[in-house]
Image 1 (cartoon, rainbow, N blue to C red):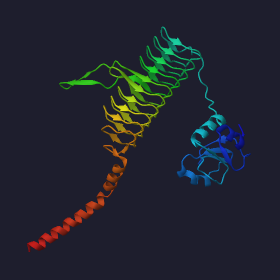
Image 2 (cartoon, rainbow, N blue to C red; image 1 turned 90 degrees about the horizontal axis):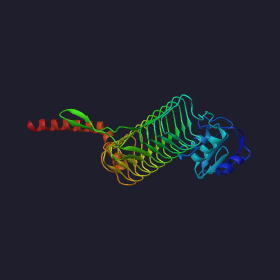
Image 3 (spheres, helix red, strand yellow; image 1 turned 45 degrees about the horizontal axis):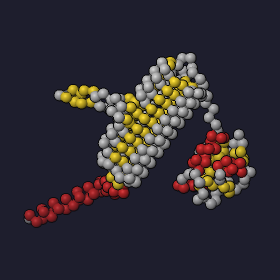
Length: 344
């Protein structure tokens, strides 16, 4: 599909600087782009790449005043580019339609209009699935579970019993929702299993990556609130509450009964101990280990997690330890020499 910059600017509500009649036929990242491609820059740190890209045009923020290529200035380059990706490079993957003959449906299953269920999916008794939701091949849905409208459940997702999933939720392959929380009581060296009889509630517009595990609560619920985005390989334990529009990045782990506020970011491989609270708009840096509650709008890093500025100062000191060791060793040798002279 061909589009001129004039046409694109009208679609993304952008301002053109350069030739309005420039034609683009595809979309690509700024390093890989070739002639005819449209690309974008959302971070000012990468503005220098505009001098090297082969792209025919670039979507930028409104801060950019000039460039060696025609540009379209927008309020949000990432969102604008995503819109053009959908238009210029549509997803050609075929989605399932209807109920595949190999799918297994239990008793009293309620399917609304335009629900699609792929090959070898299993839907247990008393499940309810709303309009336009798609379950791909091999998905499993346990009894008494409810799934909202316009959801996408990719292959080999397991959604256990009595789970509640809202509208427009996307769950990627291999994820397990509602497995038992890790609950055991140790008596005389023997670990006795504690039943986990709660459930999981996923609110509207949540996206869950591949191979994520979200455990059911011991008694009440594990709750993921609306708009939250969860990356691949994340573990969320029983009775955790994650606030609205939070971001949880790959390989993060949240221990049981922890409350995460809204708009919180947990960066990659961060770990959070149980029974604490992380306040609204807080940021936990990559590989940080959180061992106590964090106030709203705080930024922490390191282990145990500390305010980021303090953690950086401590890290700077740690980097200097080899030189400090040499200096102390030299001082000790000088001191020994002085002692030997005094003893004479």
